[in-house]
Amino acid sequence: TAGLAEVVLPAASHLEKSGTFTNGERRVQRVNRVIAPLEGTRADGRIMVDIMNRMGYPQAGYDPAVLLEEISRVVPFFAGVSWDGLGPDGKQWPVNEDGGDTKILHTERFKIGKGRFVFTDFIETPELQGDDVDEYPFILTTGRRLQHYNCGSMTRRTPLLDLVDHDELLINPSDAGRCDIVDGDEVLLRSRKGRTHLQVRLSDEVRPGVLFTTFHFPEAAINHLTSGVLDQDSMTPEFKVVAVSITKASRVCTR
Image 1 (cartoon, helix red, strand yellow):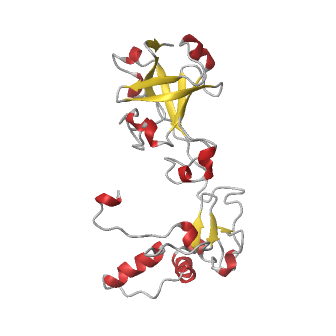
Image 2 (cartoon, helix red, strand yellow):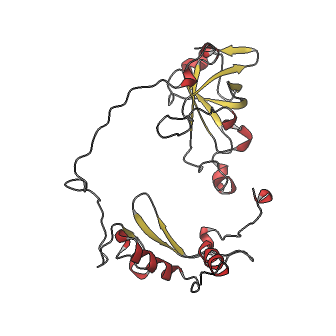
């Protein structure tokens, strides 16, 4: 995408700068620079400070400890967070002004009282409807493997590639038997939107009628198959249910 951009901001990686991460465990962790940044790159915080100065909003020099101090003044549940006070294990917010953190967020009750369970009607996905539904007898669901992160742009450049170096299609042995498919076979996977070729692995981890694959390797082009169907409330793409067919040589596999 850099080739399409009008402005490229050369940010340093997380190993090349100091700062903090706040994760889904509510843990604020301090991160220390491991290696010097590449020539011409800067910490993203320093880039933001430079932009503000150039736009007429004078800022002091960038310092991650000073920035964290400002956050603790502005964000109530970070009130007791300090650079030196985080220590090696970090703090879990809310962090009181005395530095005490919160290991368990809700113990006796929720802060806002009891929750409300909202019933919703089941709505069948359009992926499994239509006059051509018999042409796509399998449900493809996509996900991740432990060894790779999302599209793999970071993990494919690490030794993890030695453990998993391609996307594969998991199929239940009963389905594979009906389709005369064995481990290692290459099949054509086709949906209403597109097609791709994948290597097969037989697995009891998937139910009959369901196929599973990952999206870590661009050459597999899995998202060429996924549809534009959205959840009506969250507007989330329906990546977990895609109607597909599989073909080995000239034989179409059916359920």
